[in-house]
Image (cartoon, rainbow, N blue to C red; front, side):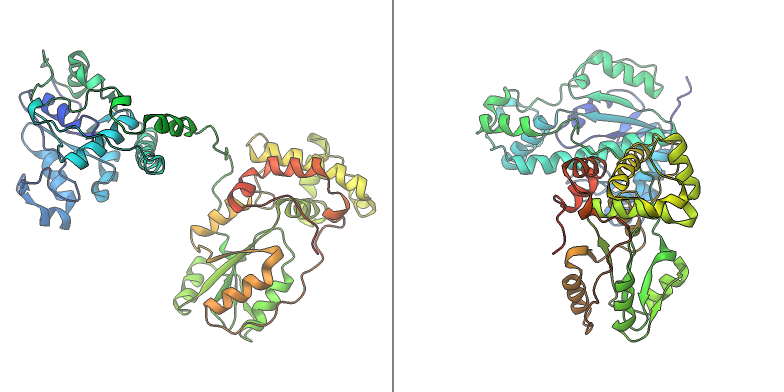
Length: 471
């Protein structure tokens, strides 16, 4: 029969049973697995000098050549690939529909404990039970969580690549790999007519005991595992679009290597004034990516910063921008007509008192909550988007060196200038704010809770607490 694939890759990790799976598949005539040929430390084994005519030195220089030889070698060839193996060939493998993907997993706690035992006993494979060395490792919670995070991230990358390219993989767990009928299903997936009647007996399971008998501190281990969010239930959902770096809004000091990344909405006239006085050269703006790259090349040692604001203050200013901006008339009409936000006609906005403003702000925040969750037809504007998403957009082109805080801006900018070895002028007083009704006039627990619910990612990521009136 014609096989649907040209070669195969077993995506696995240490202590998942990949050696046993390779040995079992090796019983099939015409099928060859070359092992961990992209391992950073060796060519598939400590005593392997070359694979298909490629040495370690040659593989490091051109890993794609080895992959090409595996693909075109006589018979049906494959390899095992772990999360820390040669990254330069991974995308080629994942994007190739003629490569059969086999994803072998195992309970991560079993993997972690087995790996600890192997490292300390120097027994990586066992072919005779008489050679077994018994050793009980301690379970270290922080170490295990780091171990788990690396491997989960790799599995998510595999899954996402398969989804994006419209491929499927053959998934099996360690326990599945011990069942000959599952292996025969794998052979069918690979396009082989051959069927096996047994799992390879070349290797012996090294640590068959119950987990309670394998570790020194099993009660502590149980307690630590109970605290792990296995399903990522505490993840803060994020439905905002990926934002660009906003290069045209970036401002540079005319005579000093300092870049300012404005985070809307904000009256930042005092920051622009500080930048203009910083090098006595005014400011430069209206950059393109090309001209900003040129500026950075001519400004060695440059520094960049943005200014974070309390989400409640920022939300109030965002609402003020929507209420008073000439370019937001359509949004105001939509908020009135379709989202029941109690906004008066445009000629009555300037007459709103604190109570009316607060009611309209709460209505607007209800819209923002739905909008950022992807539940409205209006754009998810950066004006009211999370600061987290905007900062991530900056980082795609100009990662800010310093996240300044509005309440400590003068000290933060002085520190930034000192790090760039620039004598900085004093920062002029901050503007009073863009909103006609300040937060101090409308603040209460209900409003605070609403903003915290909407901008939970900002509170969590940047450490904001409850709003406090400026001194």
